Image (tube, rainbow, N blue to C red; front, side, top):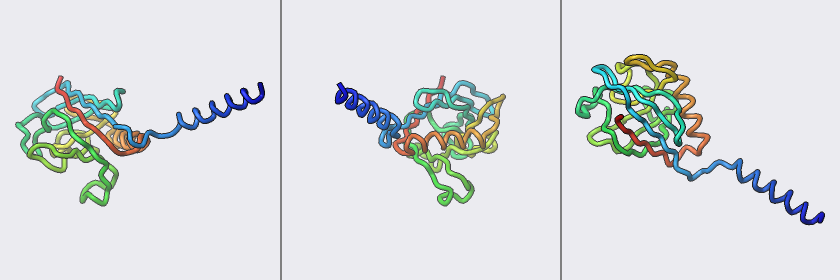
Length: 160
């Protein structure tokens, strides 16, 4: 009986350790559902692994023209981008890879479409044509992505 009890305790401890281990190679799924389209901006909601995480703001759709349009809806790979890789971002941010006819599409801080240059901004709350508390939202997104391993990041963008 003591051997069985010891075995069960050992097994429970091993399960607890396994449960607390970060899934290093699991996919991190970002989903943006764009739901509000104005002449000035495109607003949406960002979901991280199926859970609502924050608000998004992009330029309005202008035929994917560099610096003034949001990117096409679709599926993209994303990677963390270090501050030293950027001339203007002194914080960890995200780079959306292989956007058709575009490059350097980032997730970064900012509040209005004037701050985007074709990139994706995140915020805690939103109003017409703006997101708020962008610094905090960006920090939380990066923190969660790092907590999940920081690799294998997939982005899906859908228009509602």
